[in-house]
Image 1 (cartoon, helix red, strand yellow):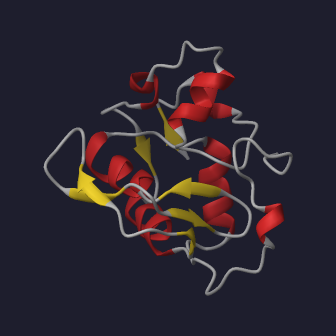
Image 2: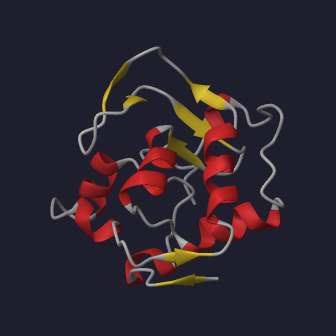
Length: 138
């Protein structure tokens, strides 16, 4: 399914991804975002995965945009997406599409199991969202 996936993403234990501050805490303050980027990473149906990431419902949204730290494209920094199982910041799709960010294998498998089709609406109650600091993240 994927090639060049870093070992830390082969068995990602959470149902959230892309919350780099949370991942810093998980790595005991030694998080390096560059470990999650790889221009050699190959993934089947990458375009469909990116579309899925972009088109899932927003679970928390604000109209805050600013230039990406790696390019000049405007991206939303205060919007979070979900498919009722996983959650991620809206910027993740941009980072995968333009900046070689790698996704966890089990996240890709989950998207494929959904036939790359986002849910039409949120059905997961707010208190069950898999935020990084919640008990709902595995």
